[in-house]
Image 1 (cartoon, rainbow, N blue to C red):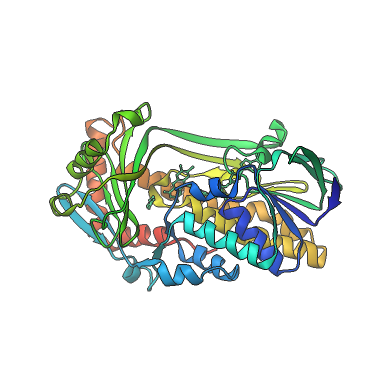
Image 2 (cartoon, rainbow, N blue to C red):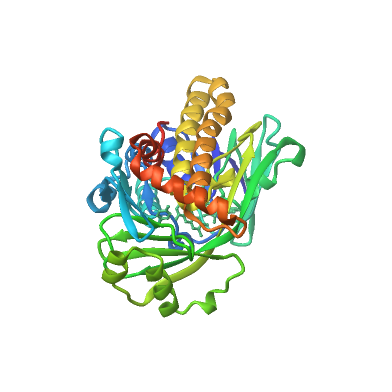
Length: 392
Ligand code: FAD
Ligand code: PHB
């Protein structure tokens, strides 16, 4: 079966879903092709901290009602080290800006429901999705569904299909440059239905390694500890996790921590990766398909939203005015912001983790940087303005 649409979006993660809603509201016909089932996509537990820019994107997508009702507004974050906890007052340091804690799962659910309500088309369990001829004027995408072969002819293919997606892999190697840093550790994460240990997020630097206390709601906690990459999940029964987490926190947090059975437990390796450029003729990349950041600065999901900000502007200009200029500028505009978030995440990762090769001198420098950070308004302001998100 073959037919024509204006845009094909590969991937139904946050990037693809936000783009699809913005295009729909601009009167541009797009179809989402997603290889997994809707339930599988909704079952993935990922990010939880939204910058104001991301919230504004969800408002533009007319999909922020529940977020505003249920999201937790945080005007500060906390750094724990040397047995003490220090608050970084994000709001005061950034003229009233803040972040919102609202799970990626909920963002995805809200976007999927809005798309269904607005009559947008998404094909789930689309197998062998393949982009073709995007270096010419007649690109198309093929896929299999329900035993049948399908073909969608289009003007634009948007690769929003995550790090392991097909879009970036379809680009000839000579046309793409990649930059990568793989860290020698990962994060062991646990979700539990217990009251969070603190009203705000705590990032802890401890001789045993980094730890993070986050949340999804007032009754659901999300906690992480740094572990070597080769660590096995089966070696981490809940009690070992709770003991390890507590041992890395400030005394007040360790004592007041409520524990309970984990409802999810996983190990995520830490990696930073950028592919350049983001446009190859009629194929564009956005979100994790093009770049992933170490999670320390909570930037991954937010970068997907900023890419879509630039991309949807470019696509509206392309489809409404026939202008190629905005599309030509997309890659440069988006990557300028991506690299700033890469730098911030890299810096915060270096600041908060134990590295196998730090050495005594490196350790002293890390301690001095933490002390400087919490005692200098200039240094705290730099952290705060990056954490709440640089302007689009
Ligand atoms: P994705 O959410 O990955 O969506 C891509 C979609 O494309 C998926 O639904 C996938 O099934 C689909 N797809 C893939 N290949 C194909 C194909 N061939 N055909 C069709 N569809 C395809 N960020 C943070 O800020 N904080 C965190 O704590 C955090 N934790 C994370 C934990 C994990 C385990 C992972 C993987 C990521 C985490 N991130 C975190 C990053 C954040 O979740 C991502 O940056 C965000 O999901 C990016 O959205 P996206 O839409 O670009 O990609
Ligand atoms: C999370 O809540 O999952 C989270 C919070 C802050 C981060 C990373 C992850 O930096």
